[in-house]
Image (tube, rainbow, N blue to C red; front, side):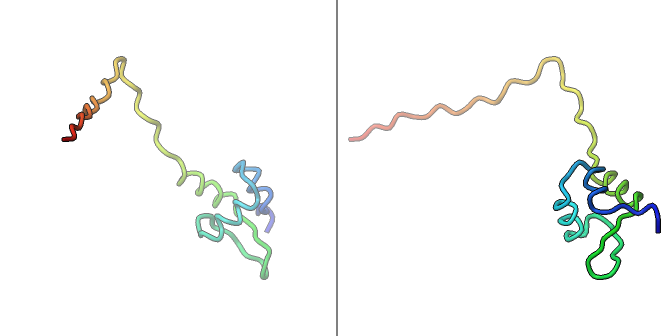
Length: 81
C-alpha cells in the first residue's frame, strides 16, 4: 500500500488545512481509503481527480471599452398636503 498519502500530505498538496481535508471526506468530495476505524489514506490519483473537478474555465478577456453601467432611477420628491 505504498504510494498512499496521509491527511497531512494531502493538505500540503492542496494548500489547505488538515481539518479541511477531513471536511472534504465528510462531504464525500474526496475519495479515500479507510484503514480500520479512524485511519484515512488517499490515492494520489484521487487527489488529482478532486483538483480536476475544482478547475474553472478562465474568464473571457474584457473588451477595450466596457459598457457603461445602467442608469439608476431618479427618486421623486414627495409632496405632502
